[in-house]
Amino acid sequence: MSGLPTRIAPKREDRLRSCIAFGGTLCGAKDKISCGCMNDGDREFTQGSICLMLPGIAMLNSLPDNVNLLHGAVGCGVCSHSQNANTRSGNAARFGAVKDGVWISTAMNEADVIGGGEGKLRRAIIEADQLYRPKTITVVASCVPGITGDDVDGVIAGVQPLVSARVIPIHCEGFKTKIWATAYDAVYHGLAGTMLDDPDFGKRILEDEMEALKIEALKKNTVNLFNVSSMGKVDEDELTRLLNGLGCEVNVFPVFAEPEKMYRIKYAALSISTCPTHDDYFLKFFEEEYGIPYILRNMPIGIENTNEWLRDAARFFRREKIAEALISAENEKLNAALAKYREFFKGKKVFVSAGEFRALATAELMAELGFEIVGIRSFHHDEFANQEYEKLQKAAGDFAFNIANCQPYEEANLLKKLKPDLFLGHWNGNATAAKLGIPSHVIYNTGLSYIGYRGAFEIARRLYRQLSNPVFARKLSRYARLPYRESWYGEDPFKYIKGGEANV
Ligand code: SF4
Image 1 (spheres, rainbow, N blue to C red):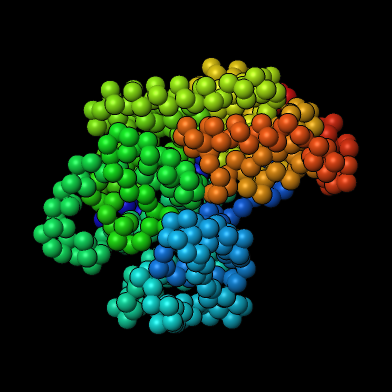
Image 2: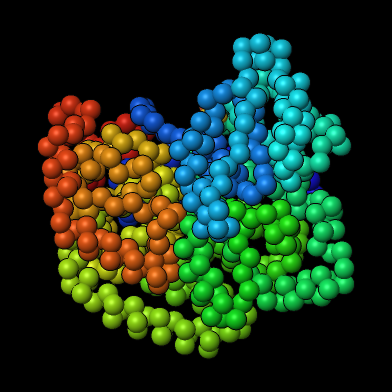
């Protein structure tokens, strides 16, 4: 593949020195980073994690006219069942009709492990092409072919002339990394190396002169807005509204984007990330390969973060005055609407848990709303967040800080000690807090609004309603139990992190 230096995306432990294990305080993490001592981290005991295939599949199942072919054991990709609600509602919101994601599996068995699964994969691609007639087939390689050494790329190259769909290899072998954010790199790698490089897709756009004229217009004023499934349609609409306010056209990539629409990202003035954790690998490649500059700085959750996100885009187009007028009007309206909520939230303690940028940006919003931040648990750490640590310390001081790829036992211990009034967690990540009787609210749900000015108001409105009556959480804790012994709560929550601190 032209601009991508390796056949598959490298793991983040190597590429970014990402970290999955830290326990201490925000300032402790900052110090470790500034002296260059933050390594990828390890635990003596680990309770659970997720495989990078999960976020990979979440993106791929959303692609319209795609068959997602999982090459591995039948259990790999079973998360598709729970993710399908997202795909259905996402399709309904964007295309006006409920539509399931299409995923199938080669269901490798013992015989395939011994004899190899290449023949099975080849037959599955041909069958999927004949059965569904999709525009694309993504072949997601999991652990088993990674271990047995199936030549997935070779099979695809061999079978491509026999099928009409564009076949795209996505390498998601779960054993190769503990950092599931590598999935974004893997999916981007596959899309960039096949679809964007494929002149057949180009022909559909470049065919006639009118289209060529359109391309020139796209190059002047279009912003590629990146969404790897961390935003729902309502959040895409908010950012599109704000970019339209600057006079820009917007093309959202890659979730729920048809192949032709994906190909159009080659014709834009600027690419802008909504989360640096997600997009750095692709945006750097994309600039080098297609000359489209990018902005990768913060996540537009929170008032100041949204202001800065808009200013960055406006600076590129030299539309700073328009941006300042827009920001001032939006801030004025929003602050008036938030006044009653701020009074209510003042001094309430909050613990935030999510992917790194989402956790940090949401904590900044919580500080803007008047909450006291008592702790953050982010799923991993990449170098892009270093400046966010600085920002957050200025806005909210120092507090407990945990980097953990799940590890609910650490979370339970921390929450018992910190006793927050509110827990904000990821989709499916609120059970521990809820069982401890702490009111909890989800900060990732593609049906709800979180981003931009609208998101700031909507989160505040929902939290106000929830905290006005916390009885549900209290009652739940009377009947639900966590599986830990009382003695665990007396221990240092970071006891099992190698080199962890006991600073809580
Ligand atoms: S860790 Fe390996 S075997 Fe398990 S779901 Fe992920 S790819 Fe499949």
